[in-house]
Length: 114
Length: 111
Image (cartoon, rainbow over all chains, first blue to last red; front, top):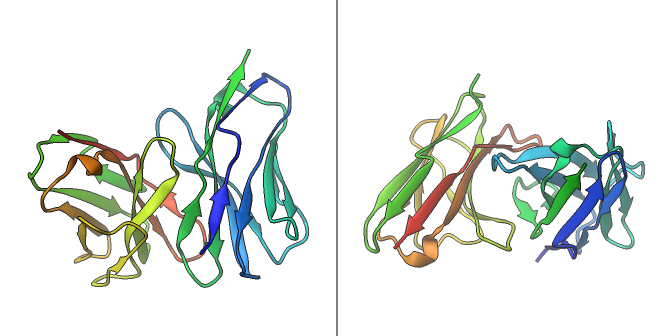
């Protein structure tokens, strides 16, 4: 069975600085997808970024980028130029290829302070 | 375009009572899901559906039933609520092409 581990329950960062959230996963699969979801205080889950395992190039979405290390089974999220609106819970998630079921980590609470 | 909506937003039940949570999506998605979120844990899949008239069990299905009579709706039922079912429930939908769209959640308390 696949598992997703987020070892940082809480992180904080000053506005405009850069922060990296860690995620590791365990799987015997070769084809899969990895995601970072954001859950602000409103509770709405929002997809931040997605990575296909077969792609070596790290995904980027504006200020958000990932460091995907397939051999190490590591998938960290880097947020550059942090903004107050980035304050949220961030969940790492795994999806096996040919399924549509997400497996979530326990989340990291990120606080951005002025 | 409302996306994914959930009814109700909050509910308090007594042990043994029953209730149904309604999820509706207007994106013509085939796939729909119910998750629960507990403190200190990520979302866990309860049941899901890959199309109208179909349902399947997820990771934590016990104590819940679901129905997908219409493509746009996915109902989650609790026949006899227990305090262990106190949680925040999220519905999601997808076209099957990776991204799941989530509803705003329902906070359920069972006393």
